[in-house]
Image (tube, rainbow, N blue to C red):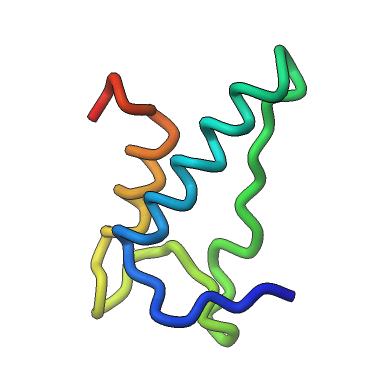
Amino acid sequence: AKIFHGSTPHRYEAWLSALVQETLNTFGGDERLVFVNAWNEWAEGNHLEPDLRWGRAFLEATARAIAGPSQR
């Protein structure tokens, strides 16, 4: 398991952006997949849904990371 202590929307976006870019550089066509696991696992603290602390920041970071640098 991987544990990300001190996660913020900014750090998450940087990590996801790098992962998306690596996927684009490594794979082609239908093999270009990035999975987001358990986007609503509240009990484990593993959620992207809006909350009282960050609002929609994690969802917006996801959208920016997927859009890529040309869409920011």
